[in-house]
Image 1 (cartoon, rainbow, N blue to C red):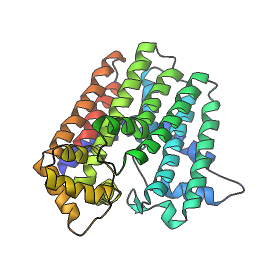
Image 2: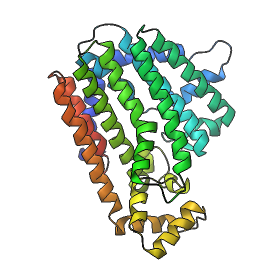
Image 3: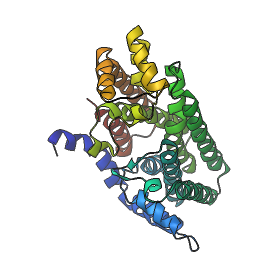
Image 4: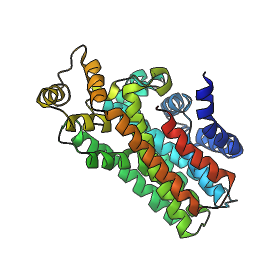
Length: 334
């Protein structure tokens, strides 16, 4: 591993170390609540995804927000587990919708078992997440996470209608991203502040931070699909192209396309007629129009927005780590 990568990993590693006791409690709760006395396939499928790794960024955000706002009670653990269950459920469903074969560097659950198992276990985890959030006794927390769950589903459906349509704009793309990714980031940070009884200005800042961080995170993920390392990003490079998804780099290249290029995009995205060498042509067009670099700069802008609102929060090492995390998210692409 290069020294550069070690340096970029440090912000998240520091956050993990700082919250290690809380995360250990979250992991115990997750293992307990993903169990099923009558349906052993539920823990089998869930464990396959949970044990595959992942940085657990979303539950870490909940824990960090609650601790940053001075929370000393037990329910930030429940909320962090809730956020992770919601996230895991959406991954199981997404892999069915996208017909994915790899997740976090491993075969997807729907490939190892079947689509029915993935969908139904995802449903089970959604149900478990609502049981957990109810246990906090906070209607506001329930409202925030229930709304986030609905927004995630809405974002996924919008992506279905926007995909494979060259008329998809950056505004629609951003709406999809806010739904399918940023909504859970924002809810994860917001409920941490709410459960801690933080002032409204701080709760608002936490939600804004999560929203901006989630947008930056997804934009970078979309960039990595065209320029990442499969062993690092945990999926195959070019998956978004093969699934004909209109992400920001492609939307910008299409907007700048001449007639010949637009005919190419229409063939590979709208008609789905993809041939050997097409991915290489996509990369050439993205480079020709500077779409990758312009998209990277947009991700940097969202990361800066996330960092700016942290000034509303108490001065603390956790606040510094959240700022560093925003930098880390966009440092994954150069």
